[in-house]
Amino acid sequence: MITKNIIPATTNQELSESIFKLKKEKNAVILAHYYQETAIQDVADYIGDSLGLSQQAATTDADIIVFAGVHFMAETAKILNPTKKVLLPDLNAGCSLAESCPPDAFKKFILQHPQHIVVTYINCSAEIKTLSNIVCTSANAEKIINSIPKNKPIIFAPDKNLGKYLMHKTGREMLLWNGACVVHEAFAIEKILALHQKYPKAHIVAHPESEEHILKIAHYVGSTTGMINYVKNTDAPEFIIATEAGILNQMAKEVTNKSLIPAPAQEDNHCACSECAYMKVNTLEKLYLCLKDESPEIIIEENIRKKALAPILKMLEISSL
Ligand code: 13P
Ligand code: SF4
Image (cartoon, rainbow, N blue to C red; front, side, top):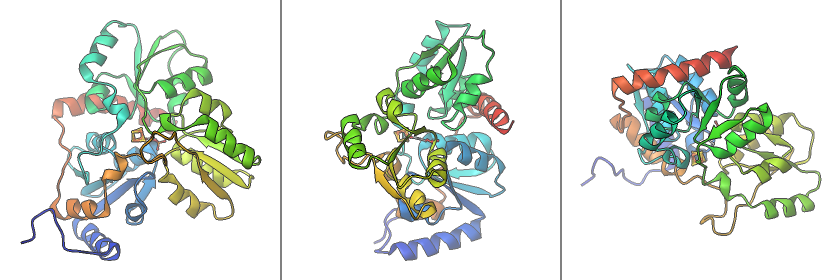
């Protein structure tokens, strides 16, 4: 007997064809992050970074949004689209940064600093967003911090690495929450430097969730879309890419004449290849099933949704200026 969540042996080609058919029938759109597996990226209507994905979510006229990414991304899409169905192929697609900031502890922290403006990186739960004045992504964080009057003290959460980087870029002192991304903290500086000795012409390109010592040696630091654009527009033969390995798929499509070298992770990282285990719980098969069954769906209590919407809208407004 075939149960709801098991499908008979099917090829990726067949699954993709069924997904394209279902998308049309249901007026659904698939929004995918660069870290998703290649087969998922290949059926997506839009692939992007967190900012691009939330901008797409804010403007789509589809009835169903299938979010091929992690939970906070799908949650943001739902906050922006209360009347649409927002689906996530696997609800276990979490994020270590979001997990590093539990609402009760964060509430206590901000109560101790009532004069501070609370800026939260989009990699956090809806509940944390209800406690923030403005949300940011890696693509617009510097602009968001610079939009805050100089005399206002700032709390930045949950990513301490991005926070430190922003303090350096903007010259602003900020109170940082002690969160981090397990994937970006796994990069091994000594291995990256050894690689650079082997490829001295290579540019090092890093995501700002990486640790300070990695960001210091990087030729470019930016969001995933920023990294792709840098590689596309920079005249160098090789690039060492310090972010999740899934980005290489889209990067390689856009840049055919340059070598892309994934930055190595520490030995104790179980896959040693800087893959985000959270992103990779989504599969093409789960994506097909969730579109077919219209489940699992993201549900947010209306009170939380409304409060979380304000700091996201503020971010989108400042980003468009
Ligand atoms: P981007 O918004 O730069 O794509 O980052 C998302 C993320 O989760 C990085 O780990
Ligand atoms: Fe979260 Fe890090 Fe995975 Fe991005 S790479 S989704 S920040 S755990």
